[in-house]
Image (cartoon, rainbow, N blue to C red; front, side):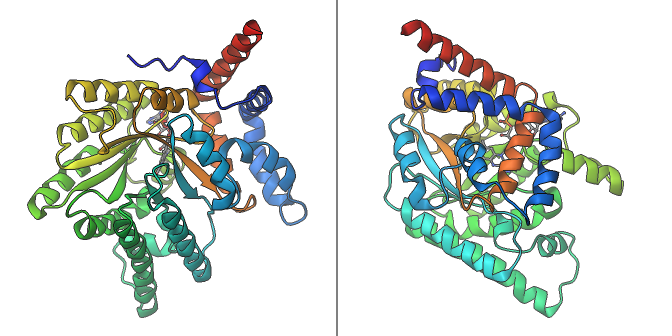
Length: 388
Ligand SMILES: Cc1cc2nc3c(=O)[nH]c(=O)nc-3n(C[C@H](O)[C@H](O)[C@H](O)COP(=O)(O)OP(=O)(O)OC[C@H]3O[C@@H](n4cnc5c(N)ncnc54)[C@H](O)[C@@H]3O)c2cc1C
């Protein structure tokens, strides 16, 4: 059975200084009050003084690969020595100009070019709001009528996404489409379905993402399977729990509609593990990625693979975690020969700050996550001390 507690393997890429930095970083991230006021202070002071060197040496170093694809080289090589692959994730968020969407497309194509034929980069990924305005995606989602200009604008969004999926197919490189807020997710699901119809005829190239904190997602998976069977294409699916729970609950409450979130964490966990089971039982039709830091879910999938006699290196099943989090899962799985990858976010420090704030907030709000990272670092520091 997999042993996630082997801290020697978990931190084998980290020097003592790296461990100390990570320890203090997670400790500070655990300070709720700081993570609450930090983003507000950053917003106020950003136009006057933005502490790029401090951020780059601390939180950016923990959670990002570099400011450009070239700067990520070292991280890609480092991970590959542990048999962990890289998924380059251009994490610039919150910019809504057409010129930026076009630049993002060029960046996505550059990442595909970098991955083409590179065994250390098995997927590419994009966030749909990197290619179109949030409000436009929301309007389409709500089935509101679009003006002529908006129709043209939306066509540009789908064209950008199509360009990426087409490039993925040409490079034989699967593409993950990240999931976002429920009030734009139908738009994303519809585009993803079109892309699967077009590019998944022989194998899964396009992967959509199912957020299992939503109580309707098992039904979504079943419906998608019925369509795929009828129309004869493969499904690609990244399974996550979901990153926007507080925002989702607040909006549902404020606007008075039914909360789309599972009522409890236990329900989300059950939904997630049921989805793993659903995918493996339909493995002839579904290629999927267990994108999670939850030890139990990773172990459940390992067990399911054993029960179904599926090889650890079967390319239809991948495991993935985010850079800077849960190395004990990624590295121990890499060591045991599973297909495992890290999302390696990159981009200019200032532009990836919203991503970094989300990581900090997640590590504060997710019970146990920070505590677990800290406990493992302490065990490893102790182990190294007693070995000297
Ligand atoms: C490789 C990778 C790709 C990702 N891509 C996306 C993406 O495209 N879209 C996206 O939204 N997220 C994405 N995420 C983030 C992910 O959704 C989670 O926020 C994060 O991974 C934490 O969940 P976990 O499975 O690691 O496990 P855990 O730490 O066990 O679970 C925490 C999660 O459980 C859920 N939860 C917590 N409390 C409750 C509650 N009271 N009731 C119901 N549910 C609760 C929330 O979703 C919370 O994030 C990605 C994560 C990874 C590792």
